[in-house]
Image (cartoon, rainbow, N blue to C red; front, side, top):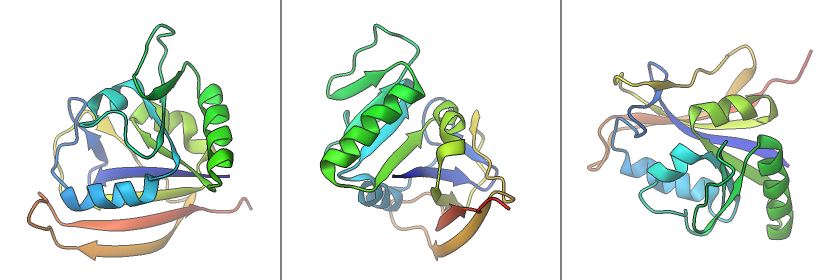
Length: 170
């Protein structure tokens, strides 16, 4: 089972500001949906609560939180990455899909980074202020695809879709 991170990152590593994305990228929303539809998606509580539409339709939403009493309508709530991984694996097998998508936030990305096989990055060509960051250690990842796009009418910046694969151990 391949673990795929799906995340938009500004040129300065910012992925969020005040529990929101500091840009508007309608073009990226279509790509996000295409990459995650029909798959289990793992996220933290704050990411789930920041979604404009909860739960994300057509996907099994798996929320990780430290709060054992937390409930989220339409989502599976777990209190550990291990439990989330078990739920995601079972769901992926039932759906006959080969990927589990991890969609944030920063703490969830940190918890899952060692398990990630591929990064699907929207590189936002801007340098916004932010309080949440994600940095890619280029020593661990090979860039295998890059497509640059100008900002569309509903995008606040130019962007590139970049795919990274984990380098094999030496």
